[in-house]
Image 1 (cartoon, rainbow, N blue to C red):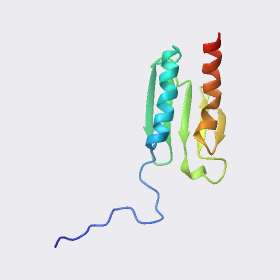
Image 2: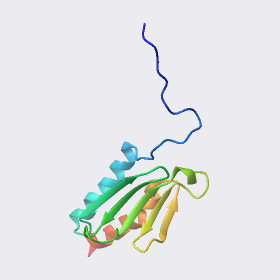
Image 3: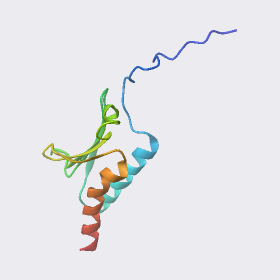
Image 4: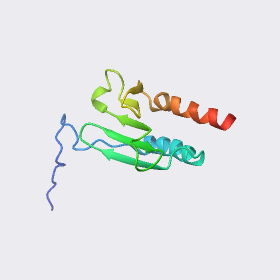
Amino acid sequence: MGSVTPFPLSHGRQPAQIGFDRLELTRILDLYGRMVTAGLWRDYAIELGQDAAIFAAFRRAAERPEYRIEKRPALRHRQGMWALVGEGGAVLKRGHELAGVLAPVERKLLKIVED
């Protein structure tokens, strides 16, 4: 019979790359789609690194991102692994749940729809 080759990651080691799972990415892209429909966002970028996964939303492609949604699993047991970072780099919201971190952006969208 054939031999079994173990997966390269041993137990307890950090993965080589942090990413979004399907439900997280669906939630983020749903918000992105609604913001595009409202005419507020036009482009996005995703960065998958060793320390964090970042979704950046842009008003225009040539600018700095209006918002960055960051997932940092190393902060899971402290402040929460999710963060909403504004255009200037300030952390606007941090938490353990993605829905709570996205709430300020969703409230902004509701204000636009009501007007």
